[in-house]
View: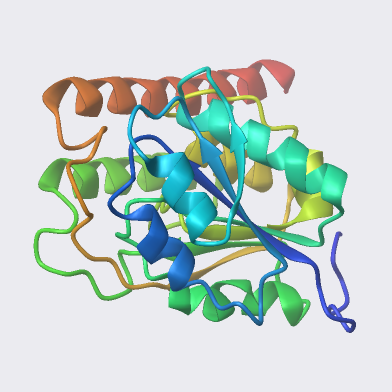
Length: 242
C-alpha cells in the first residue's frame, strides 16, 4: 500500500492547469491558489488562440505548451514537467475559475495526513452555485459513478477535475488518455490498483466563458461517448483477465 505514513517534511506540491482559451479567467485562478502551500503552478497552454499564455505568465505561473489539443494531452505534458522538477503531490485544477482554488488545502489534506493516495474534490457533495453544473453533466456524473461502483466496487460521487494525487501513485497509474476520458481513467485505474482514495466537498460556481464540453451538444456527446467507452473498455479487460 502506498503512502502509509504522513508527509512530515514540507511537501513539494505542484499544480497543473490545462488551459485552452482561458485568457479571461486564468489570472483569477492563479491568484487564488494558496502561495504558501504550492511550490509551482504550471499552466499548460493547449493551443490557445487568445492571451492565455501571456496572462498566465503575468500572474506568476510557469507556462509550457502542448500543441496537440486535448485535455489528456495537456495533463500528460504537465505531468512530464512536474516529474522532472521533483514533486511529492500533484494537484489538477481547471483554468475556467469554476473551482475555488483557495480550497486546495482541504483537497491535499488527506494526502499530507497519510490517509489517502488520491483525493477527488467532489462538487456533488459540496456547494454548487445554481446553474454551475448543467443537467447533462450531473446525469453523466451519476451514471459514470454508478457504473464504477458496479464494476469495481468503489464509491465516487463525482468526476471532478479538482483533484490531488501522490506523485508515486500517479506514476503507477500510467495515464494514457488524451482527451475526455482522463478523469475517469484515473479513478478506474486507482480502483484497480487498490489505491486509497477519498473525496472532499468542494465549491463550484459558474465558469468564466462557455464550457468547451458541456456548453455545446457536440462537446457533451463526445465527452459522454468517451467516458462510457473508457468504462466498458476497462470492464471488459478485467472480465477477460479473470
